[in-house]
Amino acid sequence: MIRLTNQTFMEAGGNEVYPDLEMVGIVASEEINRRESSYDIVMDDLNSSLKRNANNKGCSYIFNIKYEHIEKGHSTAIGTGYKPKL
Image 1 (tube, rainbow, N blue to C red):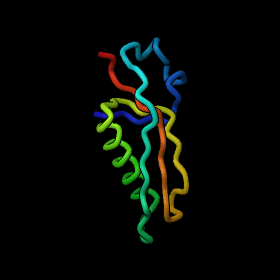
Image 2: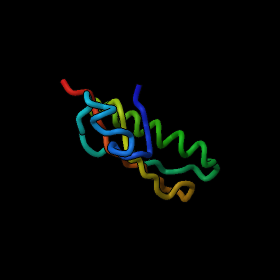
Image 3: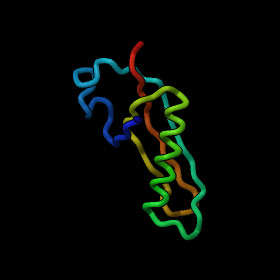
Image 4: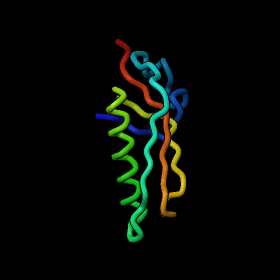
């Protein structure tokens, strides 16, 4: 299960709360919105795509997610991925 949050790693507690995580890097998703798409559908599509991309990098958490251009035809989400230390 991949967890998403808008908080930065430090805001969420950093190494004190998540001592077993290490940063992987940037995880992003991009969606072309269908004209009839509602805000909720766009957000679901972006988050699903973000989770898929995070899974491909072995991430279990994505912190500091920023969303842009929701409901304007072309939407993006970008965050910082973290995975368990080996």
